[in-house]
Length: 349
Image (cartoon, rainbow, N blue to C red):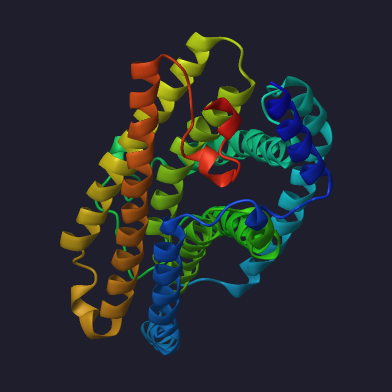
């Protein structure tokens, strides 16, 4: 008992000294794999730089609709709004989270968990808003998936190589891009000091930003919107469930929250997402008349989506393990999120 007390006191003192997580335990072996894949992807996508210029020239020659660079203003407006709203969320929510968070979290472990929960609360609101906007704005488009409530779906790459003819596309796209760019910048600035899963997150955010950038340059915003929506729907339940898993006192609601995470995740990311990838792979008649000028755009978009889906499969494995743990032991223990805490809740075991 005395040993346990002295250990807790030492952890609190370490947290107060703001010790970086790297000093507590070593990185997971997963990080080595993600680091390798990140640099491999970086090299490959850099090879597309010249093709982007050629593709834009092709669009101009053929007089196809393309991205209007005046709309880049929405990216900067989005960055400002997201930064302000995140700071406001932190201001109003942090105190509540600190009061409600279980006392088992101490020292730097507690500090990091509070930060994560504050972020998850913000994400719940943001993804809910983005999902509702996309659904009511784009559901009648011919590229909007019927699996998500689309009313007139024809094909994901409908009307390529034209940009989707909806005035809200550039606004929605740039604001969404600003969210992902903001997350990537924060990770690159602060993540090396506090994130155990730094390279995993860096790969994911880089893939998301790359897909947004290349889909804009290659006039594939319809692909990008579908991918964003599939992610956002499951992210609503994921963020809310993770937050309530730490703050919630009603066990049945914790379990229901986890079930909603599983159902939304498996449906959107493991079922619908590969269907959309397959649809793009086999149903792309608009590429064929200009195949020599558009084939690299096709390979780029398919490749990025396949990589994202690969990460979904990896995360699904952890979700299944969490689910098995809940139903076998009768208690909620998030083995995935606990990996980002290098103490790994040893005091629980």
